[in-house]
Image 1 (tube, chains in turn yellow, cyan):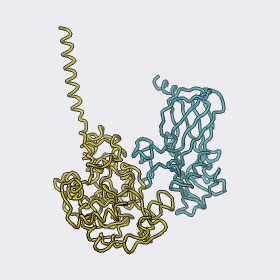
Image 2 (image 1 turned 180 degrees about the horizontal axis):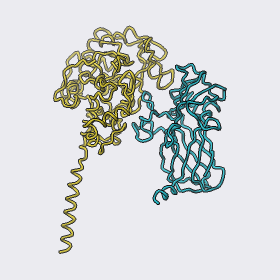
Image 3 (image 1 turned 45 degrees about the vertical axis):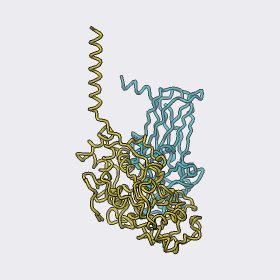
Image 4 (image 1 turned 60 degrees about the vertical axis):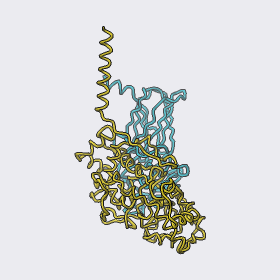
Length: 352
Length: 223
């Protein structure tokens, strides 16, 4: 009889212990789906496992003005969903106290596969990226100390940090990891192009002709499936005399890198205008004209572009048709990436 | 009792900021560099990591790697309690700076939190050591002298390893190490404030200044 009681007690204790673990509410894991045929991501998810709570916290932070000095410049002020998280219609974005950025805000998509960030590749980890715009005086102009203070003072954030990371502590690492969790989920892989590749749709004639021209003339730098090879190249944009932006050379200190900038992805290119590292091209036709007519060939100009990039009007027409197939409307309207509380994506907003 | 036990089990490193032979006085004192340029200091910080202690037989005493930010304006930061019992120590070796793995692994906490202001946001990497002040010889705005030294990539590596020998054989409770700011300007690369009032990026100049500050340490006393 004694051993039966012992077993009963053990069983009861186990049941009670199980109840305890359920009540300690671990965050719910969030699955990161790698689109079929794509390589393994670069980001180390083991260091920052995705959870529903972490993602939702990152989403809230991404849209929260508290991350900026005067409250007016959340990440989303320059990274708008309808523009694939670039700044719609702005060559340079607007920052704190009537300032301008010095480069065009890039689209935020497929970041899990990027090894380096910014037009010059100066930032080597996704978690470290937000520190640059947050602390830059011409962007969000805020300090990490102030942000932690503001978040701690708010009624909601300490609880959200506890749900995502297990305790109410708010520190630099947790803020950055939460932002990364949101940004990592920004995967764009459902454009018409992707559907064609998966056999779910087919190109019309101009799109098909454009794809053939693309593969011949553009794809060596704008490599599929990301439509960038993540390299740095000088595509013959003459240096702006005010910005004096030498690009990659600022990071490496190597004159061979002068005027080189990261090859941008062409995914969602139809909604990410203006183009170029300083947004000097307002329309796609300006980019094509640059390649075929106005390129300045200098010592560091890419070897593939020594003779510029001859393009006929016919080719530009077909290429444009193909590039429009890279627009992923399900990504641009995905309610998971909209500001918290929105059940549908917000209408086009011109904030600044 | 408990406190006494903890104390007895630790070996203390104490850093003292110096200007030449004298304790460094921030803001109020003007010093002269090796090239006889006057300079006033405002801020002096550096990272210490990978501390290794060797006993009399040359054996390494096991020690977990930690990163310490020594800040001349923060008294508590200048004392490090190592979890090692007092014993005979023949030499101490440490790295000035933060190794490459911590420069490429996102955001760290504690002394390596980017909030400490020892982190470049635009060109990811830690600032290993910082010396800031003013000099009439500086042609930079407000005559600033600002040296932010770092660089973890192989072609711009500013990590420096320092080895100091303990002169006497005795049971060591405490090692007092001097860090002389004037050594930044001295050798092997005499540094002219007029020529280089600013260093804010990894590269050749940063590596030269790192060579210089690797020479700034000496043992003042062992207790």
